[in-house]
Length: 233
Image 1 (cartoon, rainbow, N blue to C red):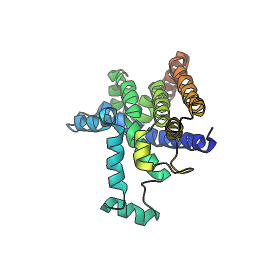
Image 2: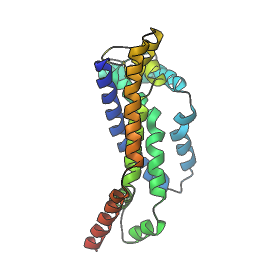
Image 3: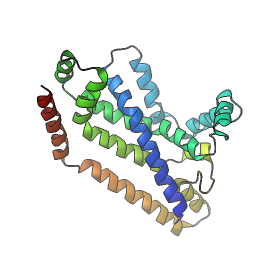
Image 4: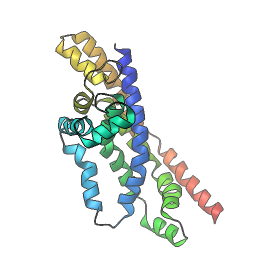
C-alpha cells in the first residue's frame, strides 16, 4: 500500500470538500431563490462537469494554469510556482470537477422547503444572509451532509483531471487512483486489488452513512429552528 498516496488523497478530498461547501451553500441558495435570467446559464456551467469528459476539463485547466497564459504567469509570480503539477492545482481542478456533486443536492434541499416559510421570513424582515443561515441551512441539513459526502467520495476517485493537471509526482500529486492505474499497468494485480478494495470500502461505507442516516437528525434540526424562531418571536 502506498501510504503517502493514501494520505494525499484523503487530504485532497478533505480540503476540496471544505472549499466546496463554502461555495455551494451560497450558490445553491442563490439558485433556489433567484428569478434572474442568469439562473439557467449558471446552472448549466455548474452542471457541466457531469457531462464533460474529465480529461477535457483537465486539459483546459492545464493550459489555463500553465506558464503559457497570462493567468498562469500571474499565479506563478504570486505563488512562486505554477499551479499546474502541484497540490494546489489539484485542489482547483477537484473543486471545479466536483462542484455539481455539492451544489445539486443542496439546491434540491433548499427547493424542497415550503415557500411560505421563506415568504414569512422575508415579511418579518429577514435579509438574504439571515434567511440562509437561520432557515434554509437548518432545514436542509441532511442535503448539505449528503453533498459533503458525495463531494468527498467524488474527489477520492478522481483520475482524469488529476492525471492531466497534476501528473504523477510522489508526495505531491500522486493519488490512489493514479497508484491503482500504475499497478495495473505494471501487472501488479495483488497490490491493485488492495488499493481498489480500500477505495471500494470507503465509498460503500460513506454511501451507507448517507442512506442510513436517521431522520431524527433532520427532525432535530427542524425543531431547533422552530424553537429559535419562537424565542426570537
